[in-house]
Structure formats: structure tokens, C-alpha cells
Image (cartoon, rainbow, N blue to C red; front, side, top):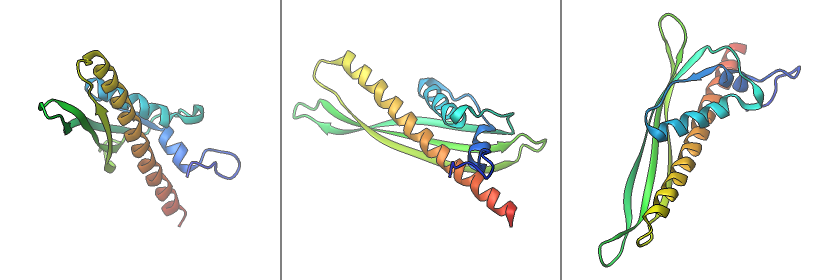
Length: 153
């Protein structure tokens, strides 16, 4: 999918991804996702003039899945969900494609280890942001490949 086109130029997926500007995403987790997306879109040093804007909403929710006999919570499931729209930088601001990406991870909370739990939560949030960025980048790469294939026909 990310293979170079004949002649060594960037393929449709890599070229299309490099032309995306990622909008601001609120909260710290949104910052993590935005940075992860930018890293994927500028892969191999490809950064072109922007032709597309990517609007993303992102949230991480927590579910308790482990409870001790004393009713203390010891295991959490963290679910990151992002909804995105790829918008052309044309006068009509045309929405080209949209989708959803999701990632699930977990966090253990050990008795009286609040500082360690905060650090672990940050690590889990970063992993979720990375996984969601991978999924969004893959979905957009498929979109650009399909558009290139349709243009050839």
C-alpha cells in the first residue's frame, strides 16, 4: 500500500497522506493522537503542500473490569474512540471520507500506588493514541489507493 510508484516516486497512499494537515484535537490525549498522526503522515520525510484537512474527535473511556472483595477497583479497560473527516481544501470544504477508529487497552491499579497508576495510565493512553493513529492512517491510505485506482480506469 505504501510502495513507491514506478520511477521511484511516492505512491498514491504515501503522497495523499503527506498532503494532510491534522487539526487540533482537545485534551492531552488529543495531543498524543495528533502527534502520532503527524508522524505517520510525514513518513520517510515526505511533507507536501497541504490539500486536505483532517478533523478528529477523540475520547478515552474507562470501564472497571476487576473488583476486589473489599470493592476496590483493580483493573480498568480503556477504550479510545476517534471519529474523523477528511476534508478537501476547496472552496466548498468537501468531505471526502470519514470513519471511526478504536483501540482497547487495560490498566492495573495496585493498592496504594496512586503515583504509579497515574504513570501507567499515561503509558496506556499513549499506546491507545498510537494504535488509533495507525488505524486512521491505514484507512486513509486505502482511500487514497482506491481513488488512484478509480482515476486510472
